[in-house]
Length: 443
Image 1 (tube, rainbow, N blue to C red):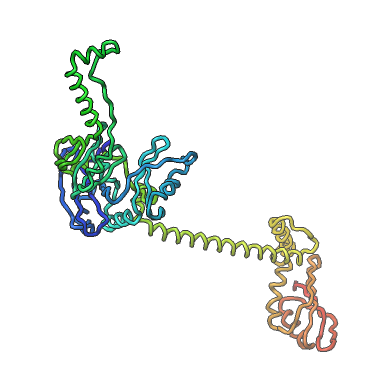
Image 2: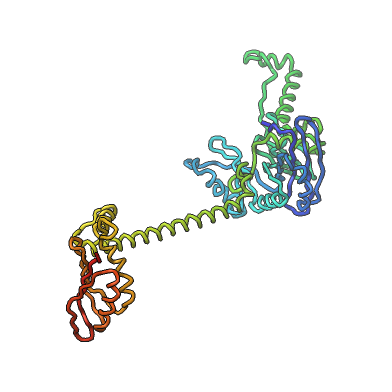
């Protein structure tokens, strides 16, 4: 079915770098040629960029640069047919199948019709179009763009060669020098109906004797019809070649590129499959953003990685704090052997702090220690060995050591400003003096 587009551009390609390329813009709505011309070679493809804007672009592959053929499909090869096809043709081809693109055009029971072309040709054409910013929608064998006839072939001459379409997916490109031999090799079906009617066996001899001349004429017409039907019918759009066998039936003359362009739009045959399949429209629109997307993905991965590392570091710190808090808990409150949860640890520590803090501003061990600090700061040589707080009696007992007796005297003088100081017996052992000090608040 012909595509419902207002206009499209068709270009007949060539793998030979210095071969001219014919092109044409056709409008199905107006049924006329909008523009046409010829490029000196494929290097001038950029001159068609303006015509390719907002128009589908179809590439015609010269049949002379490829092969259309048929191959029998082995039993059990259906599922992997695309992969198997090149190797089914391996013995018939002179080239390495890995260098060839094999496109399945049609399957009829156990017969596959394929198009074969070298990879480097398609790659060269696609690269040339991509360099000019032109998207190639279809790549079609040019002979398959000729009109299709059920009672024979269609043909047109272009660039000194004859394009011939034999069927829906078969065709050839023939030089004029061997076109006659090729046509002679084609066999049309022979269907002959005897023109001698109503002759039965009993009257056959009589009829021949009565009208021998008429029978002879009928036999001659049968022979002529047989010879005529043995030749293929060729519908041609350009002047027929001279002295070439076959029934050459002229059609309304057409500009060959116009004829091919119209057929290209209606054709479903394309070589752009497998590695050459065009990208979906949404992928094409996303292509310019590919680098941005890659950069964004790299940044996102970096951010996620950093977040993961930060989380791991915080978890390690939390584990370290938990271990340290449990160590302090066991040291301060050794009577508790188990710590079922962190909330339990927190509650027990708060209870212990509350008991140490007392019930009033002037009571509690913590208040005593805060008031004791200035005096100890004045006598840094004093080392507290043990503390014992008796809340009931309102006193704090210190067990300390110092380098000499004068250190304890300095401590007593410093504490006397705030407390009633009762100093116990001092003893000296080796180079250390030890003793006890009892503190009470002044009345």
